[in-house]
Length: 266
Image (spheres, rainbow, N blue to C red):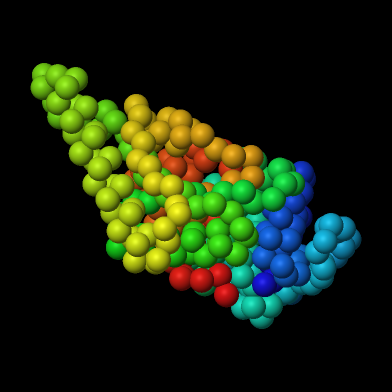
């Protein structure tokens, strides 16, 4: 299964995309293709040196396109890539990662924090929001965990203060509301896992003062990946992560995989 790494000159001085791409290629048992996109009519960028990635066959290529996301999406199709990797931090409106998540029909892995970890992929966590695409996003996460030999965790994150009843109702009433939310999320997670025939995944729903606190408060492995669903949205953001989805991305201490909701990586 091919892993395509987008080489964007000057944007990834630490080589996070190559490190993450190498980890994925080793785990998936396929080659790594390092791809540079050149605009139509522009002089080709200097071809990068072929990196040495232990245990992985590496190819260097380039493609001409009017946009970087469009070029990488075409290259992913041409090479039948299972995943596209960028060194980006979690995407904001208009970022290459956000635009590529819309243009590509394969998952897009973003280096960000934790991407320089070179060990194996040990766990895949799926951010569960309960929307209409949640089951398909979970299917991608489960497939990624199976193919890489990692364990699977399904997690929901909530801002505790925003879910509560008015302050005059008291702390006890607030705790009841949070506990009801937690039970609803975990029931939905278990039902979705059962529909996929997955019986050995961990489920959890964690609420804190903010979504960011909820994300950082569940504990993360150095070799972990976070899978989040992405869908086409308006012209301003180009990626629908929902609220609190964007906060989950901002707080993620591990590389993020944005998926359009395909059921497998191939």
